[in-house]
Length: 633
Image 1 (tube, one colour):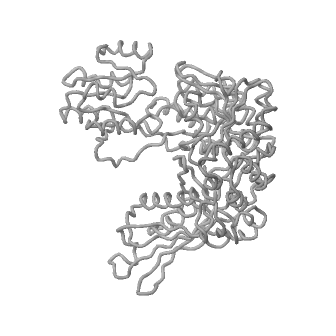
Image 2 (cartoon, one colour):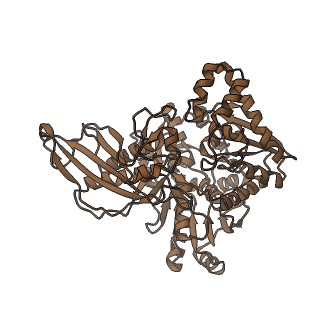
Image 3 (cartoon, helix red, strand yellow):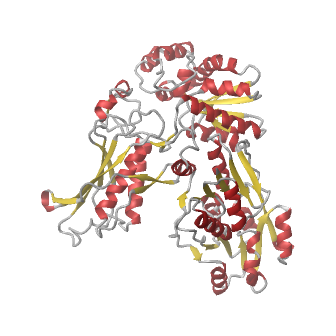
């Protein structure tokens, strides 16, 4: 059993992640103000000291603690550490994503006392404190002495009562309302400075800083307190799930995996680290990779087989070079590339005439070039969004490789270097593996593709994945949302959330490829209004009656698409171009703008013809989503 200490945005994400397992867990908050929907989770309320928490863990068989509390909940963090030390229960600390401390316009303060010292030293006369009601007493020496302080607190009775207990004047209180512009209160009060906490991205830190910057207001920020080094840290839903899978392998029926793009990025980071590890410090067994959603996961990298080497090139110049390997782990997804070696070779030129040559590359400026090596396919046909003749490394993993190598260089203190850093990705045996994929049909020859949009592979074994859809749909129904939205994944969901901004997060459910099964579940749950969001690649398959759109089962039928286009009034020239496409998304560029609406409506009509009968008692809306987020209804 798992005990989550929540009450934050991270607590909600933890609940959403654990609910996917369909198994019970406990979710504990100090108060009762946070609204969180639990289907399998069991809600606990009230603070627990170390003795009470340890007793609870023993009585309820707790095997894993997840600390998803606020960064400044110091006492709770200490309690969790104490319980973990006494009981041997591991702790996952679900941390927030934080900005770096290199902003010159922010005065960083160690704690509240340090903030008071700085604010008094700088003779700030008017201060807006965005640090919450709990901080009023901690800043008492400011608001009772020389500085005019305004505190913004949550608009609820418990916050007002606490402010009153601390003797704070009510006329200087301001109230936070969800969604308000951070600039509005600053423009109203015109403070000389604001005081904020290092609350992370999800705590609105960036928005507060940006607003103050735009208005020329000084910024004082209190650093978050450090938590235990014994905790296992994650800062996003993917890392949380993978860490739970590590400590409680049986909790999730299927395990998640990594995309080839994430494996390539991890190998590139490891190889970069190897080159600059001149002190021969112990090499980590795992290396950090920042995923496209901003969270960091740690990826196992194979032990180093040989030390980096350098060689003399033409014109007396040289090259630092080494390779690193990651074994692809696709989790429980039936991925044909599971277990393959993903190798990154990193080569960094240096100049012999530079004083630092033979020690480290020249630190002036750098560029990163990502190339394909053995086992990586070459693009030979248009439509993939990649240049003809280029390696089949898609845009997202390419950017992941570049960004993560840059982060590695910055972390180890290498700022600039004049020559390009060349990262070559290889997959031994990739050419043979590619013959068992659709790559040859897509015009990718000689190897596999390096792909992935999220960096994580969610398992798509039919029975277990459909069960997870069912659990998500049940949670969505429990929200009493007027509409449930089903969509294929993160990209389409981003656009549909903007289309339905008022729906709760739990109302959005991923169907993966199982459109038919998801609609049947919606019918069983008697959902009155369902929206189906679909992008063009799945839409052309669905329109032909394929309710499971996985590429292993069905590919697009160009003759069928041509028939729809013909009925939509498209010219013979357009029909001929459709017959030459490799990817369905090319249709957005091929079909003239004035004919797209008619074509899209016809395509949606075909989809509804197959989907609507699966929801006989409900109303089904279908949204066709373009690559840039335009929606056709």
